[in-house]
Amino acid sequence: MPFYDRNNIFARILRGEAPCTKVYEDEFAFAFNDIYPKARIHVLVIPKGEYVSLVDFSQSAPPEMIAGFWRAVTKIAERLGVADGYRIGSNVGPGGGQVVFHFHVHILSGPRT
Ligand code: AMP
Image (tube, rainbow, N blue to C red; front, side, top):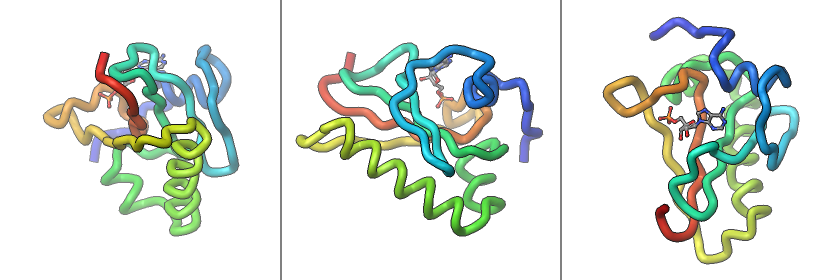
């Protein structure tokens, strides 16, 4: 498992040290617009904890955090008004295209940009 770098950009956003366009926050999750949107709606959801990737999160997070996080993901999608549907994804590891090593889920909807 890669080392969790507390200075990664999403950790800094979570601590309020770097700017973002926030769309949602609760005790488990924080969500903001992707800075380089790949669809009309492109939101990133991150857990409030130090998890490198989906694998780290699934294996290490307490069950209430896992449940709270995934409930937040679907609640955020609902709030975004993506009535036509949406897709979610998570890149895992460098080979999977992950470039920020704080676990995050992409919510995308609408035509790809
Ligand atoms: P991934 O390949 O899954 O690690 O994707 C990282 C995502 O984070 C990319 O879609 C980037 O556009 C996005 N991103 C990187 N830096 C920022 C930032 N400061 N604010 C918002 N989104 C960011």
